[in-house]
Length: 185
Image (cartoon, rainbow, N blue to C red; front, side, top):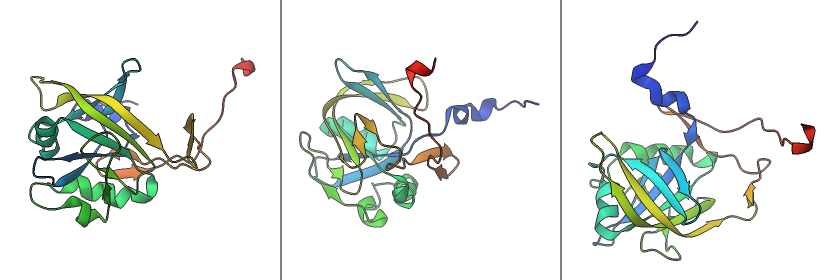
């Protein structure tokens, strides 16, 4: 039996990766926020999009300085990711509150999160202002790196336990996976 869930339709496509977006203002104060509405949109050129509310501090900083980083945590960082989604960087230092460490990125001004297993450094390509509660930020990938123990062409599921966000403050990770081979069909 089905029931209508129109008001919660976004959760029908969850879980999504729980990620951390880092940015920095002209005052050189780094900021970090959690997000999950993210998708690659092009390989050539390398573009990725995130969906943010325009009133968010991160949105303001990305517009101000023109870059940001996407940091990929594993399941062990779920509490830090939760904290980064509950407070505003306008009011507190979320790096301190969540016990995360900002370190210099390779190609952009915004920092990356030391504790994360992978990072995607982006420059602002474009913001699409929608007549909606979220706008689309398109970033051009300038550099990407992943910890070799957890990533070789793709994540190694035996080792990497991605942080998945189910919505409504529910976090999880994978516990079952299968390598399907083309020759099976």
